[in-house]
Length: 339
Image 1 (cartoon, rainbow, N blue to C red):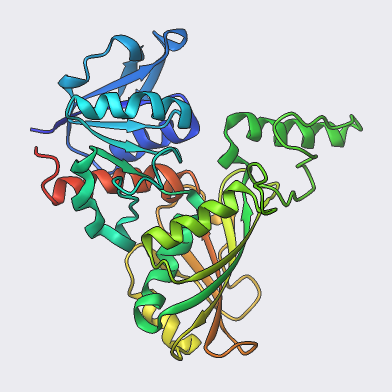
Image 2: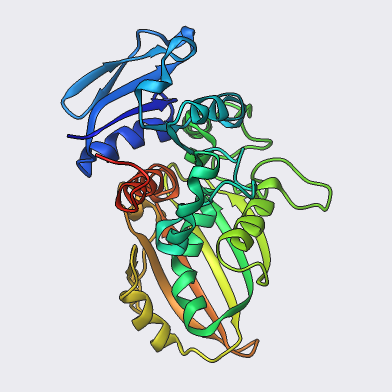
């Protein structure tokens, strides 16, 4: 026996990864329904050894399912998540639409699993921003041990975080440059091939970008509202995998050796940290993997009780689809879903 589940947005990067991970982790489903707009009706999507056909989102009876994954963007989520939740299904939404709603838990299972017990208030659970997820998986054990006062993070974010069209733009620009074509930019504000762009999402009134605001606000909601956070988010010419240079200031001393030992024993983390050429993880090596990787753990003597870390993860997996599936598994384990 399993649960009846549906996925809205199966043809996007995150949607495809959700199906792949549900199959890999043998998630207990009796029926899986693939839903999309009428324009995508009839499209086929692979799910393990099965082929699923997209059904009409507008006509689907959500009273027939227990769980719905939403991977179709904020506008779709705002319209459909409350309607689906009203039918009794638990919605796990990958967009930013409900992350700051006080009645909607924002969950990373390794960070704040107990918050899921508030999910039935609106029957919606929000999946955090990809960059916030990997950072907090790495920082939660350190915060528990020595209390983080301040975080300064610079991200190196792959283009897959902006969708398939962004990946295509990097590919097309790279090919074009080799044959002396002038690169054209449609997804990104500037050329991404052989370049870095210090803008992820739109600018806000204070000069920060929406992505930077997400990292600050989501850290406060999930980890500790008293932590001061400074974030600079940068898009880099990498297809999959985000890197982050993270610096933390702590209330109490924690040596690099102690931090390394602590992180080695913490859930969801892999420590690869040899002080030699290549003794660290890069985004390319994280692609397709479940873990958040931590490297270059060292003490920062520019502040009292400072640490610096290099944090890497597959943004489509742990930064999106895997975390959503882990939330569903947590809901099962905590009795919010029944098999």
